[in-house]
Image (cartoon, rainbow, N blue to C red; front, side, top):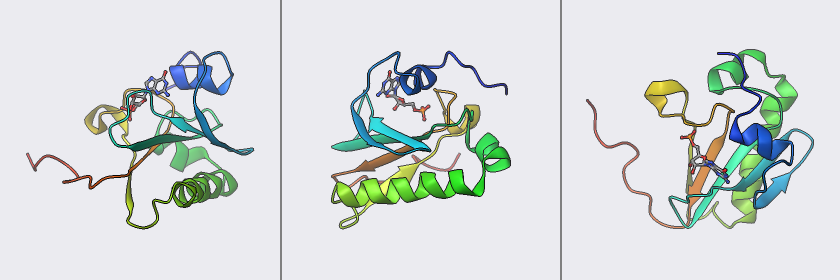
Length: 121
Ligand code: 5GP
């Protein structure tokens, strides 16, 4: 899939659309999800133009990959989620239910999150 430079997260990264920023460094931007599914629901994005997890794990540098995961862990600790815990979800492609075609990690916490998926089909 080619990267759509007009996707909503590309516009947020360019500052064309506002967001509630939680964290930023040279490789990563994180902000609150506009429709939170838990008391804490933060989206953690690489700044590079990657469509999804498949694209990112093919093309991203080791530095970009490390930065994304380091940032997620740091944000979780900053939000006090390391205890009692949290969930990270990455939707990839149509079966994964991905809606926005710029890779993002969901960081969810602040309550018991229940089952991971509904049930096996
Ligand atoms: P996906 O289904 O692609 O994994 O998740 C996309 C997420 O982006 C959804 O949880 C949705 O609520 C969130 N989202 C969509 N548009 C916006 C927006 O304009 N701003 C913010 N902060 N979140 C958005």
